[in-house]
Image (tube, rainbow, N blue to C red; front, side):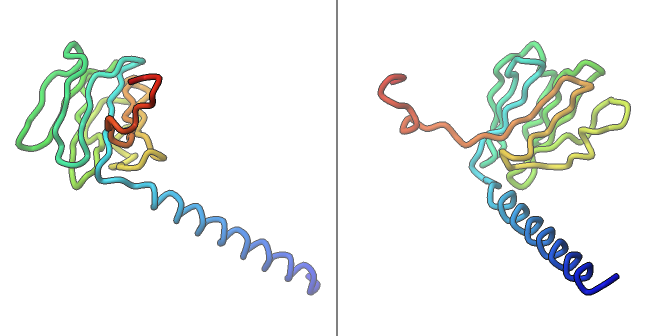
Length: 142
């Protein structure tokens, strides 16, 4: 290796580390504690969980099996069986489900719109959005 090869490796290393640091700062800045976690089964919204305090709103009670208000545990129906969702520290995550590789559980907890929790074997998706306010409505909608 000559000195130009070494310089090329150093420049590429600096660029890759800078890109990683920028992406990390961008994604970590998107976390929210006042958002709303919406649980979808296929294309249907079935449950909304507030990231502020874990309060919930059932949108389709055909797919919500049970809710433990004290432990913030929400059990919804998936294609392979029950999917257990937990609220903890302004985040939501899947703690138990039945799928070939337990992909949902491995994704961990999320409170970022850039990190939805997808459980495709069970057709469950949890998307984090910012809270809705009346100020968000424009003149056409309101």
